[in-house]
Image 1 (spheres, rainbow, N blue to C red):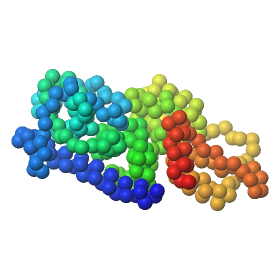
Image 2: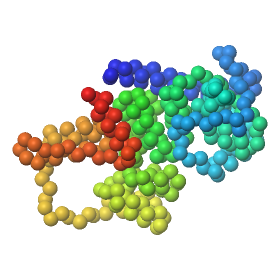
Image 3: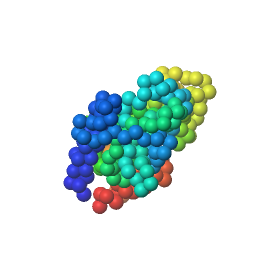
Image 4: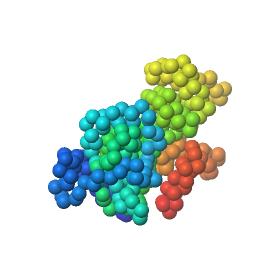
Length: 296
């Protein structure tokens, strides 16, 4: 199983990123209508293109779409979208934002490159394209990273190298998925920034994080002020917490890395205890169960 996933990483991520780079180079050939490798750039009706059902983007800002539409009206589409041939027309693989802007701009056609793309690669290529162009909000990006980790079975180090990011950047982005759903939605709609969201991770419970999030919004706190809010002194507990055994702490860290979530090992006796694995949604639970099943 590990070897299969390893091959998928090397072949999949590398090949998909190469595909994106090829599309970047293809923009120089738009005026000629063909590329150097002989594949034709099609001119398709943007209103007829079917969206990618596995598009990682959750929101399309109306204001930014209008700005892109104005740019397209003046300068045209600078980069073709990627499509695949379906049973009753063409289906978008990547480039939905450009297509939506073309519809707003009133364009009758949009340049497109048709490729043979499998159902599995529909998700992967859409994720890579958006990550490669830094075109997602922080929560969408975190979900994209997590889906790629699940799809390819790779480590965070391998993913960071493949998408050209620092490991710490990938890790900090993934940590945002530990926030409760209402806080994540505030990041998606722009009510708070990624910096605010990262500050909220210092709080112990989802309830505290949600409450602090609302205070940040209502009082218009800066990221620095949000960090101070999250770091405010907590009431001391009456009982002093005993130091955890170093071996148990190492085991917890290893399990956290393997499962991508918080894991607590509690010793309830000399030779017994329990393992607590946290999940933050039903989808997150299913992801963890898949990880556990695949490790059998």
